[in-house]
Image (tube, rainbow, N blue to C red):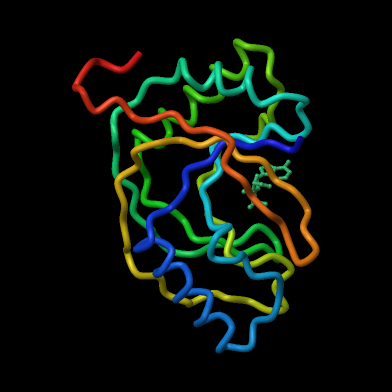
Length: 173
Ligand code: 2AM
């Protein structure tokens, strides 16, 4: 199984992302656009791993309070264009805790520095610089373990489990 840990996005956030994708398309940018149901923010990429249970057990040890996310600008890694997030200490902390929990449980993951982004289009035929994005936001109430499968017409992402934020006011770990 190909696994990753992600934040699934609110409808409002997805609507702003789709608007940006439409603006790119209208400008003549062709490529592999992320499907609406696939838009997500990755916290850690695990890759091939034989079972979900140990990963879910590790994620259960991650404590966090609900926190807010806001879109901010677009950027690119080569021909992959993404939407960025407003700098957030809470987001960085939750990514750090997820990665620490994976490491402590001997679950391998991509150690590349956390660089929060939501992929909008891969293999872009042209530049998307100057495209605006509405500053939509959401409250993050959970983190999800996702499985990625190659479907006939693109990737299929399935949520295998989730860990809810602790809204009780208890001090997170
Ligand atoms: P990307 O959108 O920048 O490609 C599922 O593949 C998710 O894991 C995507 O959000 C992808 O990011 C992310 N990811 C991070 N590291 C990855 C890697 N080494 N290989 C594939 N996907 C990776």
